[in-house]
Image (cartoon, protein in one colour):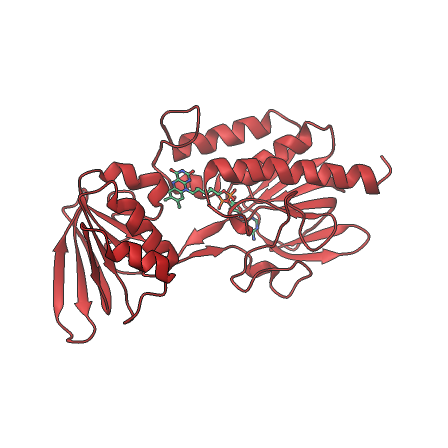
Amino acid sequence: PFDVLVVGGGPAGAAAAIYAARKGIRTGVVAERFGGQVLDTLGIENFISVKETEGPRLAAGLEEHVKSYDVDIMNLQRASKLNLGDLIEIELESGATLRSKAVILATGARWRDMGVPGEKEYRTKGVAYCPHCDGPLFKGKRVAVIGGGNSGVEAAIDLAGIVAHVTLFEFMDVLRADAVLVNKLKSLPNVTIVMEAQTTEVIGDGKKVTGLAYKDRKSGEAHTLELEGIFVQIGLVPNTEWLKGGPVDLTPRGEIIVDAKGQTSVPGVFGAGDVTTVPYKQIIIAMGEGAKASLGAFDHLIRTSVP
Ligand code: FAD
């Protein structure tokens, strides 16, 4: 069995594995896709001390760093269940079962997409999901924000300070964000709000986004808007489907509830990164949380198990 088994191979999982391995304990990482969301990212300019890098390069760096320690990496393996026994058990879709004294859950999250033509094709070519990451790339340009919940309205306020103009699109006839945010948004001179709009297509010139097509749900009329960027803010979904109905407490949205040390509701089970309740989903935050959960797990081990 392992002392620490990490589920997930993104920034949080990689940091957790390195911190555990450096304690000289038996460490394993099981990941569906080592590298995680970083593999789908082009430019990264907010990973402090590295002015500029690219996702696949950072992912390769994560793997190289983890591999420089004695860590058992099980890539392309999907965890399907967590059971409690003498040890904590992780069942894999392949049928195998892994056992460990402590487990760190770092299965990340995924952005919900609009599911319209052109969205996939122009991802990282104008279609973006993270205003903190990609906002500055659209300085002085025209952008749309899709979604009128808290994250959409926050994104629109944030972007309005950087870009030339923001158009916020909401599907329903009401913005679901907090009133204080909605009031702030409405006070901004370079923001337009379009209600009851259904986005229908991302338009581009083959290289980058040039516009957005949408339908007015009331009149049924089709419109297009010329712009350079589209920020999709219709939800970040934690990868916890496999934990539903299990012993670890999740929020109604499916996030793993963790305390300041990354401890979940189950002793010996820790969580880190985008999959947890920790606010602000970013690479540097996920890494810090992975380190913290790993130290939390080590603390747990020295208190509960005989070496
Ligand atoms: P993830 O990176 O999501 O990793 C999760 C890991 O768990 C993966 O290895 C996955 O395969 C694995 N996994 C999932 N389910 C299972 C399962 N059942 N069994 C086994 N393994 C499983 N952040 C920034 O700081 N700067 C940026 O510029 C930036 N740009 C971004 C651009 C895009 C397009 C996207 C999508 C995200 C961007 N982010 C950026 C956010 C950043 O990528 C995430 O905050 C970060 O990757 C979270 O790390 P994580 O380890 O928690 O999760």
